[in-house]
Amino acid sequence: MEIIQTIFQSIIDLGAPVFLPIILTIIGTLLGMKFSKAFAAGLILGVALVGMGMVMDFMTANVGAAAQAFIKNTGVELKALDMGWAPALGLVWTWEYAFLMFPVQIIINVLMLAFNLTNCLNMDMWNVANKVCTAFLITYVSGNIYLGFALAILQCILELKNADYTRYRLEKLSGIPGVSMPHPMFLAGIWFYPFTHLMDVLLPDKVNIDAQKIRDKIGVFGENHIMGFLVGCFIGIFGGYDIPAILTLGVQAGTALTLFPLVAKLFTTSLTPISEGATEFMKRKFAGREFTIGLDWPIMAGRSEHWLLMILAIPVIFIYAIFLPGNIVLPFGGLMEICLIVPLFYLTMGNLVKMAIGTLIGIPIHLYAASYFAPHFTKLAETTGGATVPKGQMLAWLGMDISELRWIFATASQGNVIGIVFAVVTIPLAIYYFKSIKKEDQKYAAELGYDIKPK
Image 1 (tube, rainbow, N blue to C red):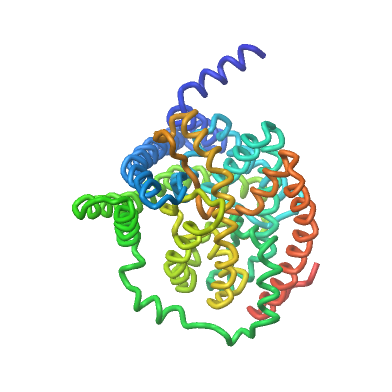
Image 2: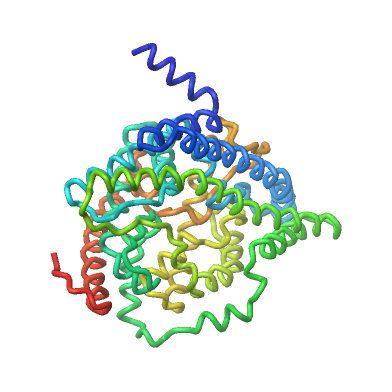
């Protein structure tokens, strides 16, 4: 046992950019991939981790320094710089137990398919990182790794069930049959569905706005590099910079927001072959079964509603961040609030007015959750060297997937009475959500012409 532990610890001590490619290569080979293909996929993951670390260091060195000047000049204590989703999930890969979620997610999917508990064949391997994030956060907050992985496993199960219960809703919104979305962000419906359902009662569907017309008028201001430039200039102005420094910071911020999604694609590039290998493995094991293919949310990216609201919400996010008591997060990388606005788009079937109301409710929740978890992301970065964090500054993730659920279970795991109460309330809300969303999906199936029998 000591020999195994020594070998295991020696691999971990190599650092995430080295040991994760080794693990990914082993997993790919076990799934039946050629060693060369598995090795290439693993190596790209190592490149992605190093690249994300470099971009994060660039961001904290430039935008972070300006953020400290912003704090000094304005007196607003926003000492936690928002990384956004790509660096945050890149950072959680550096956690020493991150690699365990690869086999865990595949095994859960295989078992649920074997016992006919799901029809979703999950190909969205990039979002393994989201289960890693849950396990890491709960482990760091509670000090109990078993609890962290237990909640991550529960998340895997609920994602697959949610994918099953919303497949026809997805087809109605995207026009693509045979797909589903086992993405964690849609579990936000457990808490947000009662609000959207109430809005369905109070606001008729005809109360809406043409999103495409407004988006056409916004034009280039919705591009990442433009938004980054404007935000960088904004921070520089309030940081007391002179004109050349303001413009330089604007370009640097635009560079960071442009590079984040580009580097994030390397994670997808590395995990896609593994996903395909897992798919072929499952098809061999479950020949003759009809599956939906579990994909990431961008298959709905052609719709204008969420993009428009993401852009319009940016000034609202800054207003909340500056004036919300107790918030310590300076918005930057997560300004698009994807993991709030896209689930609202999904739940309201693209009704922009209802989405806007839900966004106004959700932004403070995300800011408080980001403030709560900031010390833990910072500690991870400092422990693993995943990013350089200047003294007196922290890293945060605004717009984190299922912020409300992660905060509830993290605080409950600490014995916090409020967290425990919210955790208890979450159980009947989850039952209500899954029953209701399944019933609605049967209605959408009928509208699409599918003859299915209610279960």
